[in-house]
Image (cartoon, rainbow, N blue to C red; front, side, top):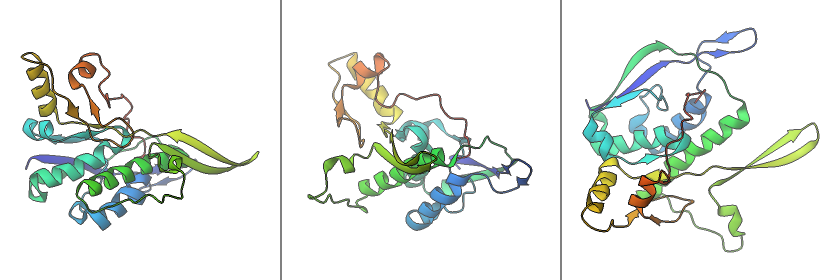
Length: 223
């Protein structure tokens, strides 16, 4: 076993009631259906988006990391492809209570999960997104998330920027960093949807501007 994921019950606390298994709405409504359809090997994991997991150092250094709320989805798919289901496991941690977020925020999280699955499928050549030349280019900006809502002041279309950047494996970063001590650092390709395709890894890494620098945002709030 090289990768172990946490599993637990996710209660949902209302104002006066507690639903024992009503939490984890993004997991139940986005991640699990997507895995059932496109990565059925992962359907046995109770909490595929849980932030608690362990793996050996070699494995962690060999997989890329997506940013934001796409990170756990990407890890699950990449670990499956790297070591296979037989090297993956989960452990029951009982019950975990998380803070709940508004549905409009969960919608944006679900979009990140969907984009992570879509990216991996494009890389596997199982998904081919063709643009209609008659549709404006701005409608294909994957980093722009538009959310239609009804408010007391009428109907509105809210726009959010949901960047998805893929950080290369640590082993690749270290290799580039080591090579920079001996010669000019080579260009490092960073696959992503909404950023330039190439960057100088050494310069951006040293200045703290490396694409996808980890944001301390994860409290696992109802993911």
